[in-house]
Length: 399
Ligand SMILES: [Ca+2]
Ligand SMILES: [Ca+2]
Image (tube, rainbow, N blue to C red; front, side):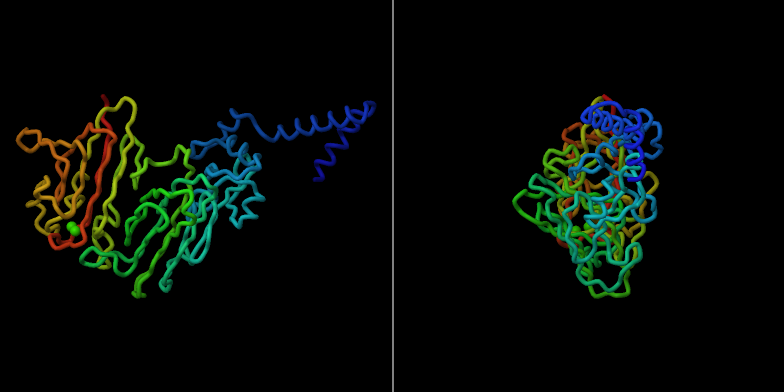
């Protein structure tokens, strides 16, 4: 305020002999010129941006200067990399007013890198919210039911995404059912029941404008010997947003290469069921087509004999593992790759959509678009021993 007053005084001294209106107009122009001194050009700003975010500080600054709350606030890097790596670049006043927490500045210093952290029993209507256990980043042992109510930011929200930045609760039992702890979401399209380790996964749920609130629930069972912690980034996605996933895609991939991992998969299964396959899943993972690429190839992780483990005995001697496929052999837990084909060990091309068992072929390629992989697990685990699910890599092939 003081510097602003000084600027006006100086402007008045500079223009002593003009009429009141002219003088005021000049003062305003002069003040705007001075303010613009503090907003560097886009070029200068782009050069200054040293982080990995694609959005520049210039865009953040423009957003901060626009007094409308956006449904897609621009991301910014927080100062505390250990807990929340990313915040939303908002006006300082908005961050405070809506009970967010500032993790440093953004938008050329004009905005606040704001994180809305919410926990058990809270309600949010923010575009981006981090849902955490009460003592996060420390673990909790004694929470029973922890709910986040998600109110639509406005009446044009079509999707909510859940990015599991960090998520560990009790895993499934020996029959692959989530009996101790589970996570569920209500208020949208069918959302699978999930437990165990979900870190690194991102899921999309369609919501209807008129359905009101959605609810994210982490239900903690009676086993107090286990510790649980979670940090789920909940993002509301407008109907016309480019970030919206195609309907029916629980997960979405848009890189030229990447990895799809089934829920609760880790390489070595623990006694608490962390790493064990989860039952009653039936969902689609979408891989977006890319210009200049004509087919997609799926491969297992090289050198890891347990990277594909859907049915049969995963504890048997790995030298006995061989690819299992087809509707006759794969009736319980399997993946479907529409239009898939692979070469068997004898140079024969086999056209097959459905894969299961304890080994994936060396590679499965498809040119059927849109690219999908469907994951199906049934309600029992009678034909499976120590199945852990899968991690599969995809790669787009040039035309
Ligand atoms: Ca199984
Ligand atoms: Ca099963």
